[in-house]
Image 1 (cartoon, one colour):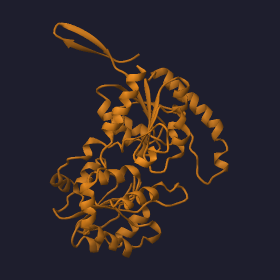
Image 2 (cartoon, one colour):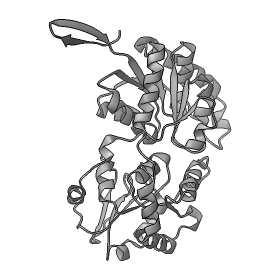
Image 3 (cartoon, one colour):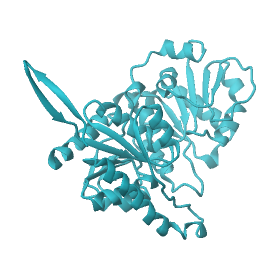
Length: 365
């Protein structure tokens, strides 16, 4: 049943039905946290639920008080042909299981955030006449969104050119949590026990980056003669050190505080973090992920932002302690980049995304 709530006007009481939105996406924080950003702005107006697998999305939903429904999903393993032979059979079962969840919850709309976890719910929702919206984070469209595109009312995108690839594409920008913005720098520095001086933040995704960690640690002593380095190094990757001004944390529960410290950043170029850094006007050196398990999306993201003058880029094959140090020093003194970021129109996409969600709900209800 739909949630009901009461509105009082004078001595009269009215009943209003809350429409239901189900979100899906998972496998990595990059497919979940953007959903949470949108949920936080919709939860008082709509009945919210989430469909996902027994992975990071489950823990994040529980931590944020989001009603969660679990099903199994199957993932394509790039370069592993034998492991992928059973995908069609597993996918059929996964679609059926997702359909059972939809039959139970009866949402008015399904919102997907890309990735393999979205495929079964999107197929099941389309079969039941439930409108589907998906969001594509990257400049190059992911396989999951390619597969579900025809099932969707709209395909929202983080990059303008990505929207042009679909008849129903709409450029909205990237969803971002409100708590990333307008944070207090002094409070953030105190939280991480850092002195009030220029601060470089370094992070390599949810699990950290071994190659970035190793190269940074070979130069961090020299860097910390003049700046702080706040290093989000990934779970289990901290090392023993007494370097003054070098602070390691395995994982940031509150990236808003990390960003508030930052005068500059070194990071991978996943779409979410890249757009966040640019929206926050933080000069960034991107080192995009390049390996056989990646479709090259981070490289394309980095090239896009580099071509419009909003970042610096160091390719992984060129990464050494010396090149990293040289690029960090240039980044810290890049006045042209700071000017370009100040004029940038890249911003949080929540309002545009919510406008598109409400437009579909108004038509369908």
